[in-house]
Length: 336
Ligand code: NAD
Ligand code: UD1
Image 1 (cartoon, rainbow, N blue to C red):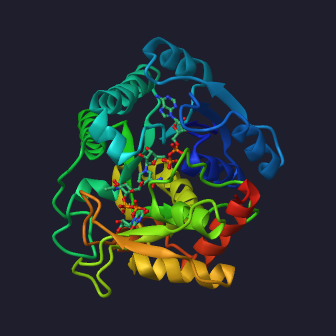
Image 2 (image 1 turned 90 degrees about the vertical axis):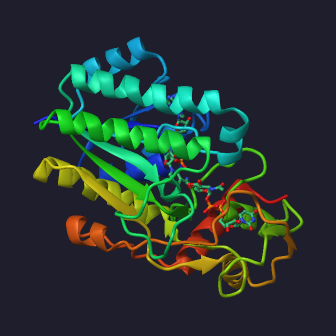
């Protein structure tokens, strides 16, 4: 039986960790990436950590003909589709780039999969599809409402995939709604590679801890939360990677669609994250309270029980592991 899984965006942050998890689970993997937000040395690093070679094809999913040729050549048993642009602010400034890259790229991939009878797709969705959640914890039946172009591309892709799946009983897909991925590989040799100032909190705090930036800017302390700062559900990237292995196995076994939240169920405030990181490094991390960032919700954390019931998956790493692994990776990247 063909055991090869194609991983789009496999050189990226979550894709690289998932590639390792798939290899550990016994799959053959092929990475495709256009390296628009990753480095060409990442596949070699994955191979080093996996202890075996990893095939990587440079491909832009916006090139429909090349995408079709790739699927025809590899004939994967399934695809895990990470490749997308993901910066919310950038999506507001340049929406066309986001619609073209994320939506067109996904449609090209789906077209090629349909054409060559590849029937299992695991898709990277996001808690962003819940917009400003009405209540927490959020379960999968909560109202969907995107509040920026990035979120709208995720909703459009979810809808396109669901429609295709409804039209063809042989095709099935897992829509995985990630909460806040954070942390790094425990070896300290693989992690997120932010370009410029990180948008997300944990890599920003890590850069302040390393002396690369002078302080964390806490975006508002007047939210309706315990200490007034935003509350999120931080999920270790290693746990997230493992969920993909189990989602793929679910599709192959059950041949049914799946929509699940991937979070821990536990929310932490911005100040709690700064404190946890300070514990990890053994000294305080400077911060200042600034204006709210437009578009931020008060609190956003998952009810992850459906993933546990259907996949037998549950996050096993806590906030201390996230901070310790993010810090080891930051030390590997270097200080100021
Ligand atoms: P990332 O930017 O590190 O990885 C994405 C990879 O896709 C990069 O290597 C990039 O070069 C590649 N890529 C982008 N467009 C491409 C194209 N047209 N053709 C080929 N390759 C392309 O991002 P990540 O954090 O690993 O996120 C992976 C997925 O998870 C994305 O779809 C993202 O929207 C989603 N997601 C991420 C987060 C998060 O906080 N990291 C949260 C929720 C959802
Ligand atoms: C952001 C995106 C979301 C995306 C997710 C993962 C926005 C509005 N939302 O979510 O669509 O799915 O990243 O990529 O960009 N914070 C600070 N200072 C900082 C950075 C963040 O105080 O320098 C706060 C934020 O206000 C928030 C929390 O930290 O309360 C987490 O922020 P972040 O890591 O950017 O994640 P989200 O906003 O949840």
